[in-house]
Length: 184
Length: 179
Image 1: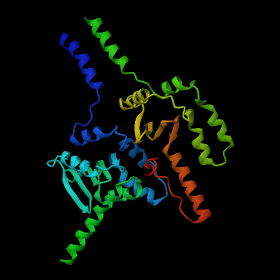
Image 2 (image 1 turned 135 degrees about the horizontal axis):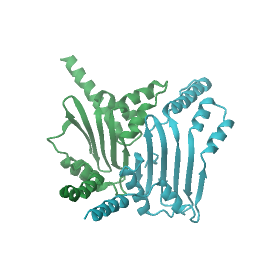
Image 3 (image 1 turned 60 degrees about the vertical axis):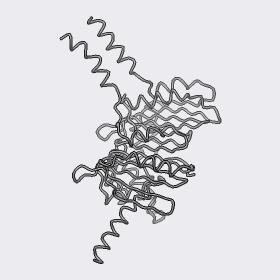
């Protein structure tokens, strides 16, 4: 009984302490979140849930609802007035734990690099990471939740955030794979 | 030993009570340059009588108290420590939940809310720039179906007028200028 009373305040302290996700990507976000050279966007799971509860007669909105209803959250870190975009891209790439993430797409167009990774458990994709690096641009975007790759590119058209348009490349890659199979 | 432990536990509880939007409002409302408004709960309900649309009236009747605090023209006295404490209080789960946060340079936009079973009980929006600040806090019992009804009505009205679908405002459009 005495031990319980002794431990109780420590247990309560632990309950009130914030436990942020202690992974490398989160640490990378946290490193630059207060840097004024970066734009930070965070949309919470709660916001997606609330958006999904609004039904209208507009089919475009309903398509958007269908995509976001299972999303956990969105974090974006972007900088478009920098000169060290490539260095940031390399730094972020090194932080991605290769064992946990699967590379879905890698595109290099001149000096612009785009890579997309996913983290899944079984058939469900739990996280999608988009990394864009160019001399004057850097984007790191993370979607969490139950992600449907077929629908995620719909968000690219809806979200007016620089860098998100690269998500459309996922569908283009899929279409290319289907076309290649048909040709074979 | 037991009274000491009880005092320790009480102390830890008290130190975790952090500033909410009301505390921010009351602290700064009397500062020079502040435009502070408090709209009591009955006023939106009375003013709904003068609103034509049934859906808009229903939505307005669900609005309760509104608090607005604005600083402009280079008169923003809000300290960063107060904003951070306020943001932390939201993160600590003291009622309000983070919905959207956007920061670009020195501009912060933070939207927080409290929602339960399809009813939005509180919505707080604050926009902070170097020279200006705005805080809007709305309490009420806003139902999603009432918001839906207004959106649907506006969509139909726009289609009748111009034959074009109005652009539904994107929920997740960060209100920052493109570089």
